[in-house]
Image 1 (cartoon, one colour):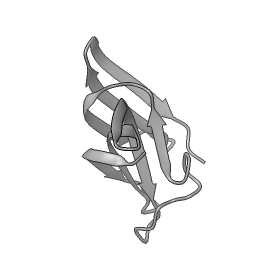
Image 2: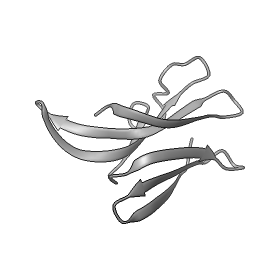
Image 3: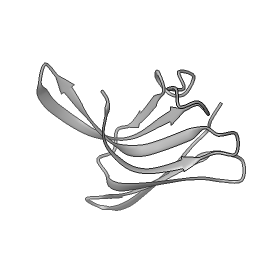
Length: 94
């Protein structure tokens, strides 16, 4: 699974970059489920392998127009539109 459409990004105080977007699961060219996804990079622009699974955190929610922010404790906040309205998620980071 890979990020197919980036929607927003935020840079933390320590220089890490978090990109929010959507990804689509595919199996041998057949498209499957859509996920809200976060990808984190270190302050040098390298994929942060310690975040999520290999640098990517995918949440099994089909959403559009993702927005991302950091709270006062550097937790990642994700908001996106869904068929049913709005989804808000908070991710605890290491």
